[in-house]
Image (cartoon, rainbow, N blue to C red; front, side):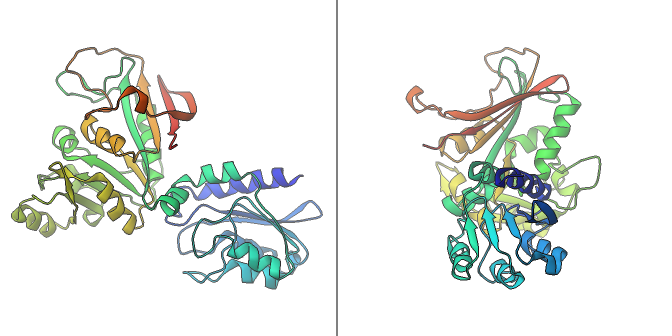
Length: 365
C-alpha cells in the first residue's frame, strides 16, 4: 500500500472517536513495516492515551524500524498525557508520516523538528485537506479562537421552517430526526434561543438507539433570563449541563432563580439589547466547547450568520409546501446585501428517509 492508502485508513480509524475526544482532535495512528500492519489505534477520549502512544504500546518491540502513519503532527509537550514524540523516538520508529501540522502553538512544527533532530525521517503533509476536514472544529477553535458552529434546520421545499401559526412539529420524518440526534452526539454544545424554548419546549438531549456516553451542553440564549423553571430542558438530562446565556439587562431575581435551580448562567455582553453572540462563542470556548450545533429560530440563526460565525449548514428538506408570507424562513435578522451573500462550498446532498439532507461549508474568504 502507498502512503496515501495507509493515511486514508488512519483517517477512517481516527473518525471512530467522533464526538468523544473534544477538546482534543480525532487522531488515528498505524504502525507499518514491510507493508504489513503491526498495530493501529485511535484517540478514544479526551484525557485518554493518544493514538500514537496506544499504537506503540500495542506493537511493543516490533515498532523498531517501522513507519508510523498519524493523522496529526505528534505532540512534543506535556499535557494530560506525556509527549508522543518522546515515545516515538524511544520506540525506534524509523519514519513518521503526518497528515498535517498541529496548529496548537505548543506544537506547531515542534513535534516534527524534535523527530528530525533524532534522525527520524518525517513526511508531511499527506492527505492534509482530508485531515483538516475531519477535525474542522479543532482547527477553527485553535486558529480563530472560537467554536466551530454548524447551523441545522428542517424546512419545506419552499423554504419554511414553520407554518404561519409558528407550528413546526414535525416538518421532516423520523429518519431525519434520528440524523439530527447523531449530529447532536458529535457536538460539544447544542444552542437554541428562548423563543424556541417557549414555543416548542425542546429537551435538546441526544436520543440514539444505543446510550451515548457524553452529554453535550444545552445552551439557551435568553437575554432577559425568561427560561421557565418547569421547561423540559430542566426536567431531562443533567441540569449542570444546561447553560443560560443572558444579557446585561437580565433581572437579578431571575438569575438567582435559575442558579438556585442548578442552571449555570453565562453573563454575556449585550449588543443592540440582545446577547452578543460573538461573546457567547468566546465563553463557550473557555468551557472547552469547540463544536456547536445551532438549532434555533430564524432570528437567532440570523444573528450568528450576520456576525460571520457560522461555518457549516446542515439543512433537512421535506418534499412539502407551506407557503405564507408570515411563515418563517431559516435565516432572519437584517439580512445581507447580495454582494455579501455567503458562499457555500463542499456541498453534499443525500436522501434521508422521505426527506433530503443538504450539507455544506461556508466559505470564509
